[in-house]
Image (cartoon, rainbow, N blue to C red; front, side):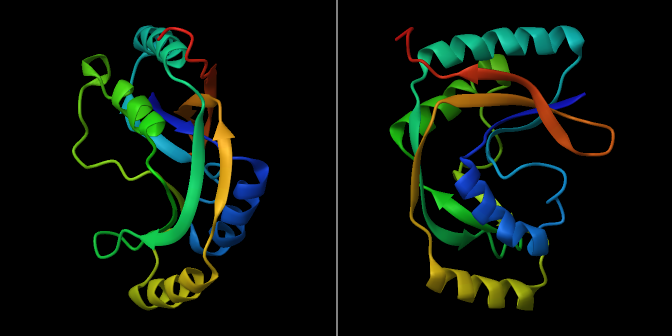
Length: 172
């Protein structure tokens, strides 16, 4: 089965992201607006129990963090994706590193850009138009995130929560 790790922002930020995702993100109905911390990976029933145990340990080591969405950006020309850029705080980066330890398969192939996707798989002209508009509108949203979620993918391609872990920072 496929699993992943993400954080979900507040309803206020989700509603704002969804106002764009409804029109510009073909994955709109598959997952709630989120910031991915670990890309999808395969695990069986026994392995996912070990993953959940390790994530519980990580949650005890890591503190809640500030999620600050500061602007709209794009991954173009690599992909025609628009996103709310999340400032990479030391806490976010530490959590990301913990989720990419040797236990979790080590470092990923690409560098980590904290973000919340608001549009993807757009045509070049659509990307240019929408990006131009959203750059002028901008975003400045701050909130505290105190939970991470282990997700799994259902047969229809949608994602749902397998287990939630509260970030406490108790074991530092």
